Image (cartoon, rainbow, N blue to C red; front, side, top):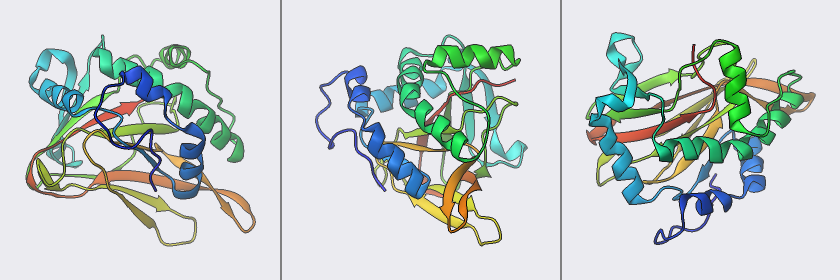
Amino acid sequence: MTVAARPRRPATASLDARLARIDWSALGAELDARGCATVRALLTPEECEALAARYAEDAAFRSRVVMTRHGFGRGEYKYFAQPLPDIVARLREGLYPGVAPIANRWNEAMGLGARYPDAHADYVHRCHEAGQLRPTPLLLQYGEGDYNCLHQDLYGDEVFPLQVAFLLSEPERDFSGGEFVLTEQRPRMQSRVEVVPLRQGDGVVFPVHHRPVQGSRGIYRVNMRHGVSRVRSGHRHTLGIIFHDAL
């Protein structure tokens, strides 16, 4: 279930060039078939390490959440403040034109009325008109024994249907365990689980809330949740790119 921007290689291209190489047609087909798709090596190791190091910079963030205090799991995360770091803003703005047509197609298939503009700035304006003013990109930090319970990232009535998570750490070098997990709750059926293998710099695109599935009697809606399994050793950092803002 992998859709590659390009094979893993020495990173000489700019971030904008790497974003431009993503095959959104193939990625959309994979999302339709599996409910998630992976873009390989979109971020360089240096970019990943610089982003992970920012977790210690409290001034870059608007809030910090300790998961155990809220029953979310174990570990913690921080939401970036405005202005977003340049690379985070570029990812949010650069990925949006690729996911917006998929989101529009999914909503049409599910009979939902919401449609999304071509540019992320226009969508953020819609969020702000709805009172959702706070940025939602975040850094997550896990240590040994930490995990993230299955959840959905809903912050108000305005919800963009897709989001992207980037693994900033290298499995089996920086940490072990800590797999990204998706569950699909199908009507009158048992839930389906998808474990998504990622390497440092990979991004996984997945639904925020639900997605359309083709059944024998037409398209139906399934509920999606995501989380992270228990980290067995080391430390794991993740960057989350959510396209809607929060109340």
